[in-house]
Length: 216
Image: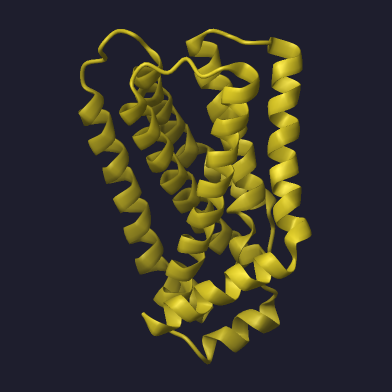
């Protein structure tokens, strides 16, 4: 745990030291929302939901996916002599989650300001946004770890990410729509359980497989 918190503090301090990278991600989010507003105005709840999660997907690529790819091979070998592999992986996961939560919070605020917020059930939508941030950070941290050990090829994340992101985004879209609709959506908690199970599977895969990547 000491190694995890030390690595996490190092990543957060480095992110704050290079604030232009963080502000670049937030500028990307703001520009995306403004372009959507300029082209679509204030859409209905179903279109709003689709636009929101598509914007979250591309924002996650710019935010959480930088976790492993930011460290070069020499630095990675240096960390291998200091900390256990699981602590390194979990620190990158928490770091990606913090960034993704920040991006999601800013996105929700900008969407509400420019495109409106057709919200009927705040609990369902906010829980979905929280679980969505966790799911996206899990997926992209896992993919970033694989890509970093495969020569740092970011295109590999796009190739491997599609089969993982498709079920995640479909579940998140259905869950969020329940919070944006005036009608009660049956089976909402089943979707929550499915997403939680998928997140647990990705976390287990990362914890089990990353030590193998660590020794390569």
